[in-house]
Length: 282
Image 1 (cartoon, rainbow, N blue to C red):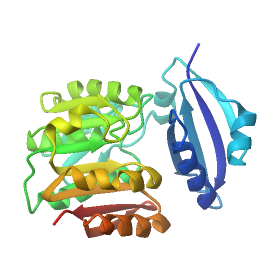
Image 2: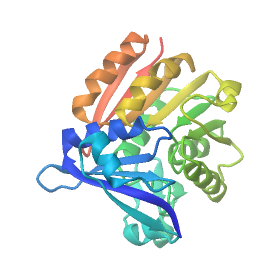
Image 3: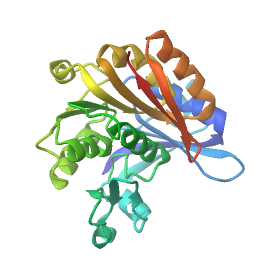
C-alpha cells in the first residue's frame, strides 16, 4: 500500500519555480521540492501528497502535465541516496551510516540517514545555512533558536549540538517532524529540542519560547514572503534570521520584503545556484 503519492514535472527553471510556488498554495499543502537536473537548464519539481491527486486536475490547475506515482512503504530514498559523500563545513560533518568511520575528531557529527523527510544535508541550501550560521557564531552567541520548516532537523540539531541551548523546530509535514524527533535522539540533541507540526507560526510552541535570537527558514520563496512579518515579530532585537531556498532572481524580492519589515540584510551568499540571506533585526 502506498504511504504517499508523488506528482512530478520537469520544466525550465522559471516555470519550475512558478509551479513550486503554486503547489505550496494548495490546501492542504503537499511537501514540495525543486532541484536542478544539470541538463539544458531543466529542473525537476516534486510534490508529495498524502492522498492520490488526479493528474487531469493538476494539469487543469497549473497548465503543466504532472505524472503521479505511488510511493510504496519501503526505504526508496535510501536506495537512491546510498553512498552519498559526507557534507563538511568548518564545524559540522553530516554523514550516513556508510561514512560513520570518517567523522573528524574536531567536528560536530550529525548522522542523517536518507528517509521520507527532506534534508540529508546534500542540498546547497542546507550547507548555505550552516555556513551562514558559522559566520554569525564567530562574532556572537545565541540563547535560543527557531528552525522553521525543519525537514529532518539538521539546522536545529546543528544549533543544539553547537550551543547546548534550546531550539524549537517545526514543519508543516508530520513525517518531517517525526523524523526530526528521531534524528534529535540519534544525534544527542533531543534534550535541547522541542518539535511541533505546524503551518508557519501557528503553534503555541513557537509563542511559548519567543522571541528568538536566531531563526532558520530554509523553505521556498513564496512561503518566505508570507512568513516575513512573523519572522520579524518573533525575532529578538539584534537577532538574526538565516533564509534560504531561493533562486537568484527571487532574492531581491525577499530582500525588499525583509526591509519593509525593518530587517537589515547583512549578507547574501550563493552556493550551487541557491541564495542564502542573513538578516538582522535592529
